[in-house]
Amino acid sequence: MENLDTIELSLMALEQDPEDISTINAIFRPFHTIKGVSGFLNLQTINRLAHSTENLLDRPAKVISSSTTRSSTSSSNPSTPSRSLSATSRTTSAATRPTWRGVSMWIP
Image 1 (cartoon, rainbow, N blue to C red):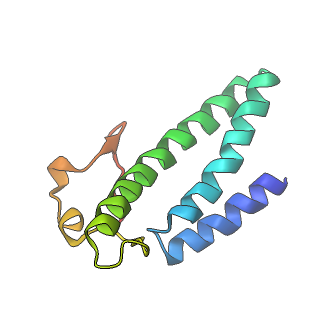
Image 2 (cartoon, one colour):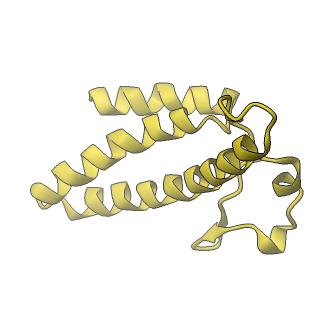
């Protein structure tokens, strides 16, 4: 139950700051734990759900991380990485946005 509480609180925080990579990771970690335990206990439906959720969270985390890395290397102060997506990546057309099973993986 503690993992579900963590997920719930982190989802509320993500609504306030959808580009916060640490919040996305805070949601990812409990799902990773649930996936591992459900696999060990052979709870296949829960395992598939947790695995799918990990995949869903992994893509935006990679997009934000790569954008943060690009932003921090091009900023005037490289010791202070930016957490937000660059202006150019925000204006990417819908045709080039990443999707997972037809669902847009774009964080507005």
